[in-house]
Image 1 (cartoon, rainbow, N blue to C red):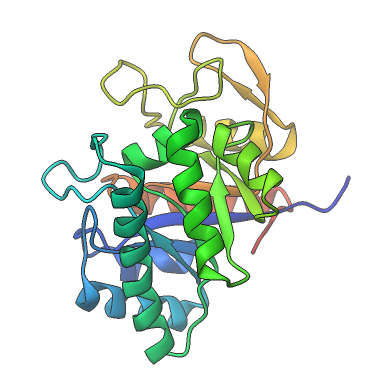
Image 2: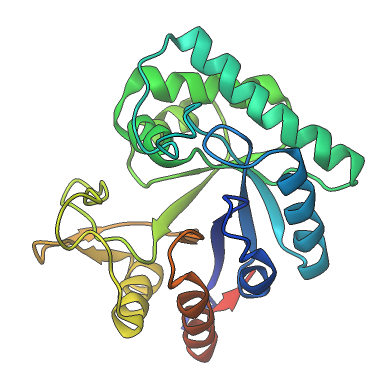
Length: 246
C-alpha cells in the first residue's frame, strides 16, 4: 500500500481558550486575525503554543463581522473586502515576524470560505490577496471549488481541505449548519468519513451518494465542543492505520 500522509488542521484563537489542549494533536492551525474573532494578544499566545508543539501556522481571515462570528456573508465591495482581508493577514504577519515564525498558509473563515468556493468575485479577491503577499504561502481550499480552479490558473499553491465533522452535499459543498445532519458527532463516524476521503478519495454525501474528492488536510473545527475528543481519536486511529500526520 502506498505510504499516506495527511495534515490535520484546526481553527484557533477564536476565544475558546482550548489551544493548549488541542494543538498537540494537530499539525497545522488557522489563527483568527481579528475579523470574526481574536486580536494581537490571542495571536501571540497561539503562535507561542504552535511553536511549542511544532504546529504550522496559518492565517484565518474572515468577513469583518464579530457579531455573527464571520458566519454570515457581508455585502461589501471587492476593494473593501481585499483591504479587510489583507489587513487581517498583515496583523498576523507582524506578530509572526516578531516571533520569528513563518506563515505556512491562509484559510478563509466561515462565510468567506464558503462563498469563495462558489462565487467568482469573492474567489478573485482572495487570489489577489495571495498574490499581494509575495511569500511562498499555501491556500487551503475545497476540492473542485471556484477558488481552487482560480488558484491553479494563477499558480497559487493549494492544499485540498476536507472537514472531519461536516457532511457534504453532492456538489461537494458543506451541508448548511442550519440543516439537520450537517454535523457528524460520533467519533467512529468521523473516522470512517475521514478515512474514506483520505484513503479512498471518495466522500459519501448526506443523501448517501459517493463522490470523488481529494484530501491534503483535514479540518477539525476548534469551536466544536467535541474538538479535543475528536482530534485525539482521529489522530490515533489514522496513525494506527499507518497514515502519517505531518
